[in-house]
Amino acid sequence: MESDELAERLRSRDPAVGLRAVGALHRLAEQVEAAAVARARAQGWSWEQIGDALGVSRQAAHTKHGK
Image (cartoon, rainbow, N blue to C red):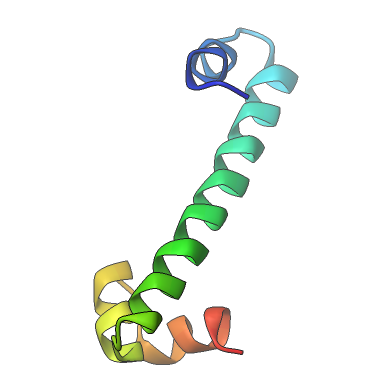
């Protein structure tokens, strides 16, 4: 889904359309976060650094993204 289409759907007066757009945003955010965490780990970042950057504890970051 393109960003313009997503923005249009978020402005929809139909709750079903808006909620599906929110779901799409959540899925996209999860993908972007996972890619960024993988890059950080590949560059030697600690789980504490990653957690700080994400605004969560190191344990939460590791639980979510650790192998």
